[in-house]
Amino acid sequence: MAESNSRLTKNKAFLQQQERLRMSKPSSLAIDLRNKVTGECQPYQFGGVTHYLDDRGYSLAKRLIELFHGRYTIGVYELLLKAIKTLAQTDVPLPSVKPTQDILTRDAQQVQLLHLDKFFQRADLRILYTTELEIRIDDIMYHANSVDLSATAVRVVMKRAHTLNKHDTVLVSFTELTSGSEPDLLNNISHRIVKIEHDALCTYLILKRIDQNTADSLVY
Image (cartoon, rainbow, N blue to C red):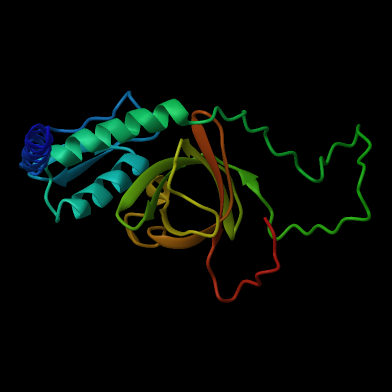
């Protein structure tokens, strides 16, 4: 009986060792999450292969590659796909985000009610303007569209993002507004995320430009 248990233990250890060796072998398989996740997928190069990952997939891939000592292996490929499938099944459905109402309606035909017990302050005049943006944080890039703009802030909508958080600092490029004579004027402008909301398909951000001359007390 003891000999049988010893043989089973050795066989199990052998199979585990073989599985570790298999998972550690280099992989040439591409990971393509396009049309499989709600987030925007961007091309990333690692392991000599081009992969299409959303922000969450790329963050998972980076951690798994570190786990496998900086190499893209079969283990990274299989564990990433398994993790994405599990996360998709456990994601809690989110309600739709209601559009923000202006504090002042500026409608001469409508009575404007103000809550005088609450303090509010409009930092800058906002304009409704839609333009394409690029938002970068570390080595992840997102495409977004503005909803409205002010001199110090911008409200944007984008495909569902998972790794952005309130108070994160991002670089914003106004790609459609870039001038040929001054190409860097509206590129890589530092902003801080002051508000973030999600629904099932989209992420909504309010980004405030980081400026030492702007008082932190001003609100968007």
